[in-house]
Amino acid sequence: MSKKLVILRLECLRCGHTWAPRQADVARCPRCQSARWDQARESDEEDAVADRESGAHDLLGVAPISRAIERATDSALSGVEALLSRVCLPAAEEYGLHLKDKVSAWRTRNAEAILLKARPMLETAAAEQRHAPPRLIMESLLHASWSDDDDVQQMWAGLLGSSCTAGGKDDSNWVFIGLLSNLTVVQVRIVKASCERARKYVTPNGLIGASPLHIPISELIALSQCDDVQRLDREMDHLRSLGLLASGFDHHAGSFVDLAPMPLGLHLFVRAHGSLQSPVDYFGLSDRTPTAG
Image (cartoon, rainbow, N blue to C red):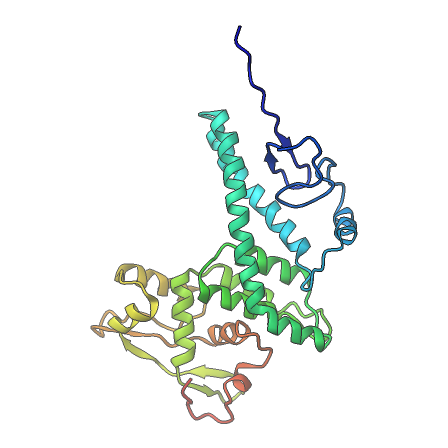
């Protein structure tokens, strides 16, 4: 008579991770390292208590953010599991568990990379007693953790830095979080080049403006690292619809495009560099004379 081999699998009630234990006495979840892996989470306050009891040193206060990323990942993956379950339930369960581990780890690495980029700005803010509204930090990292591109991560790091203000109540970066979360990697590169290269000036009412910036299409392809002209046309149309770019492809100007930024694009650029200065001050403008970036 054949015997069935039963392999015990445990599930962490904190993060949802499942694993086959190698010993009977399990002290912590191998993924989230919670000692309370077999106790369901009751509240965010309980998480804070567990963090204090663990004695973990969390310089930037990112433990709650890591948990939020895990929860957002779980939510995003639930749709995939639901779709697979309609055709093969066992495959859905295994795929969901596998992908949850992979995506969560990938997003955590991205968030850590962004925090490392932002660390000098955040440490300066802490030393100057500047703080950020929790909503800005949480939403920035939740969106930012989906990108592993260096240019995009650098902009998110800058927004983290410029979210810190003296009173800790300024939520004006909310606008820029929404804008950046809607940009592709190609669009980020275009905005960056546009704001760096354009000649800026101060308008009669003290606002910032930018002169036309005509460059060859070949140069746009090089700076965006995208050789699909049809896509570049779409990307610039989207930037124009967001109010970040003034023009784009001129279908009557042959092989040139106008890369001039709109004032909103310049404001995004400044905040994404960790600065709370006005664009006029950031670019050192003092009169109406156009000034190179």
